[in-house]
Length: 384
Image 1 (cartoon, rainbow, N blue to C red):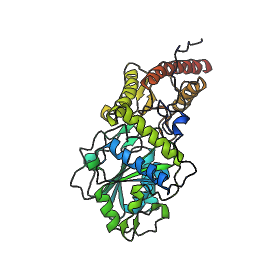
Image 2 (tube, rainbow, N blue to C red):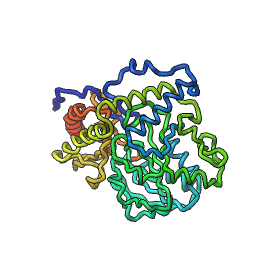
Image 3 (cartoon, one colour):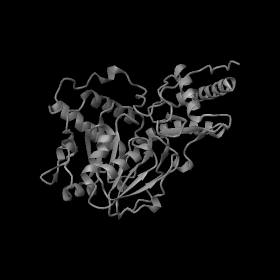
Image 4 (tube, rainbow, N blue to C red):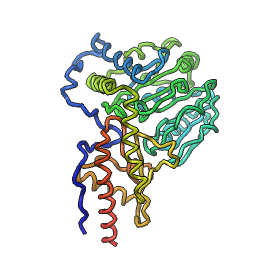
């Protein structure tokens, strides 16, 4: 029996969790001021890179004595720079509750071979921060992009900690309120909440992190793109926009345009409110629907950017096959692109709800998810 499709469609079907949707006002003409064909070392290049740093500081409320650098290889590069340059001075604690956090565990334990305690939680859950020894260096993701959970706040992180906190905040920055006084190293990429282009990462260092860099030399050799000191002192040029390798000035311009859009709509509070509204629409849908649920176990830890969902209907015989079929139906209809769960995560859907997504598009998507679910249940029954 044919199941009628909804009448309306999302205006923008792009719900990928990275790269994410562009800002709503995006058009290629907005990049016309890009310093193409110019050296990033020329005055115009330096000016734009410095502007990207300082406008990030202003929008996110980053303290004046924190350094902000633009570094190679997206968020991954920023996290690796921090771990390779700073870990090893004291014992480390690795926190993992999703695939990217698990990746940092692998790098630290198997590649750097650092003495580390590993604390893990399953998908949809989070490590209890009250059990963490913050006199060790602690590495964690603030928002689990592949599991849909986040750290609710920084209350459990002591101000008088002896160790460093190294936080991968790539899907949290610009959508969640990060407590800068509790974070010593913070990283993110442009292509997440701001919908920028890939390749570049942001590395934010507290004074405590700078002190570690200037007082500690790792036992292992550091590749050139990881080196942040010269003669035992911080290479301040990196944190003025003098990048380690050649950046894309087109990507820089795109990031500047996104920052300008964010300021224009009301800054960080407006960005967080947009993400909250997007995620909230899905949460309400789950509350009134008995065959789908949020993967996050505790509502206090639900992500407002990468919302991960699981199918709960008893009629589903093969969860992974079913979820992929639903996502495929939605993509074929052109109403939702790239919303399948991450390959290492439990079967289900993952819908990006960051600030560049319009709530009206989320609301238009939800009836389509119901349509695809019912159509796939019918197809499964017919096949049986």
